[in-house]
Image 1 (cartoon, rainbow, N blue to C red):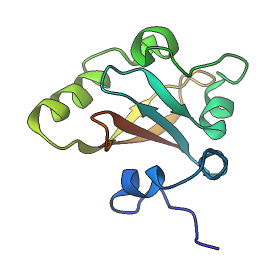
Image 2 (cartoon, rainbow, N blue to C red; image 1 turned 120 degrees about the vertical axis):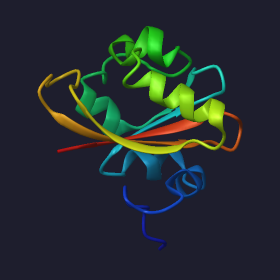
Image 3 (cartoon, one colour; image 1 turned 60 degrees about the vertical axis):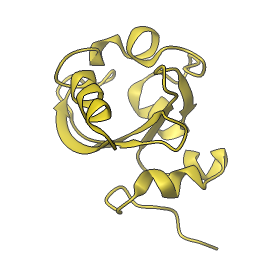
Image 4 (cartoon, rainbow, N blue to C red; image 1 turned 135 degrees about the vertical axis):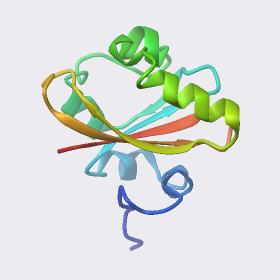
Length: 125
């Protein structure tokens, strides 16, 4: 059995794109896959449970409007948009706040997806 990718591994998006949904659901960090229009195409079980979004469906909804409007700001979405405009997206930053715990520190990694979209990975401290 091939080991699951880790949050800190290089080219995390490439590794995650090769996983099944069940494998993504078993990762110990949040995974959100967006298409080029920021519509949620992947939302793993870990992220659903940790964010408090588990009772609602995120798939097919606009991430920064319907799912996480609190992230629609220059510090979070703005960084991702800027990196996308400048070329391949591969950034990491800290963010304080979460659906279930507004004081929790999160480590965010965002990387380009193969289809023009992007992947957002969230590790909670």
